[in-house]
Length: 256
Image (cartoon, rainbow, N blue to C red; front, side, top):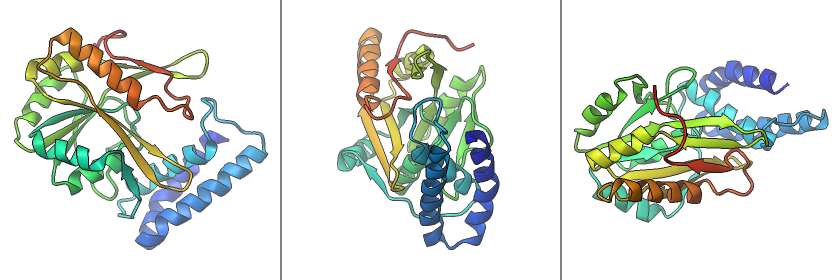
């Protein structure tokens, strides 16, 4: 049933985004997602990872609508927004890490509103990377991806978003997300500041960005790993969301 709902949203979403006025698209999506979630819950359907169906369907609706190429307003609240804006102005380049891919477009749009150039690295994603009604520059993950990252970071105003979470499902239904050690080694060698963030979406259709500085790239590598792990634990410590139980910043699989 959940897979069927996703297919319907992906087919109907782009059409609705083109036909409905911009100020109507998102409120309608919120209402439809809420209604569909109640129907599925009444039928005894539960998300296999323990997510709330209403929020899950809303995230799927956002993905489908944004692929339709339409611009529509979504309220986004950034935690400590003034501090993050100051960080983006102070640092000419940033390497931002996030595990939860579908909602990142909300944060990407806010970064672009601050005048930052955004490039995205995609490890695994079904189709092109879309912002809300705008296409983003993309670097496809490959064995030579860090050479492409280095070239992208040569620009003085580039903010580079590396969606590099290696997620594996655990027996208890949670997620373990491992940040590739090669990402941390790259940040340490290139002296690129790290930003760890996560975008959440509540049932009212409002987005919320939680973030933390990922550590000092000029510190010894072991200290950078410790700081990055601590940042991930702070950002992903959401008691209401069982998707991520804990995160490891240095252990785990290596990139092939």
